Image (cartoon, rainbow, N blue to C red; front, top):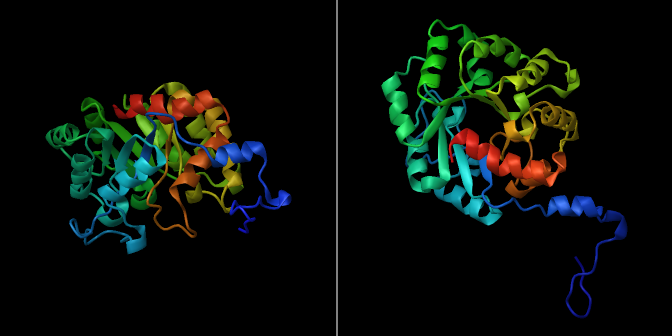
Length: 302
């Protein structure tokens, strides 16, 4: 950018300047007490990747608990939910548990465990700051829903006071919904349910997600837009889905997550723009505060 005699930057060409509303969104700072409900931590120097991991993050995709704390502090995000990733670690929660210990009261955890996990093991995870378990139908396949002990496992989670975090895509939520309705379990769905924008709002999976809003036991993360968008940022083809979720669930059952450190992205992703994307899709300040502060505090036990 060129400068005048005083050294002050000259204004950009007027044709390139964003509209006032866009400038406000680009400069969005989260309210006090904000929660990022979806990050991963990778520390292979201390916790080597699992031998059977489906994907091993490269150095540019890694981030330790200390790296995460610096990012959160820089962006004004007070609290965080660390999700044990399918990539790198699978059902090995040692890196997650170490991160929770290092981050202290500002953090909660979501573990990955096999369906046969005992109530005693779940209780131990609960004491360590783990508030739920992630089931990944994208990586593990929808056949998991039909496993003989899976419903018992969901009941065990409910009895432990833990929530289910579900990653699904396309029509997978439609397959999961009948089973979820049978168990008094709270469930948080990742990344808008990962709909396919080419199929529209009435695709069976997304319609089943909207239909679950009245249960009071379902929440959705406004996160991971790049996971389902066919367009570059600001991922405008996800706007109708975010709007439909806001209408159906309201801010009391929606939360936000950055998806840091942005694994397997086809393009560079930075942290602050993910907050700006949220502010773009949720125009009301009161709704933003609920989604960033009060709703995640209630769902994740802060």
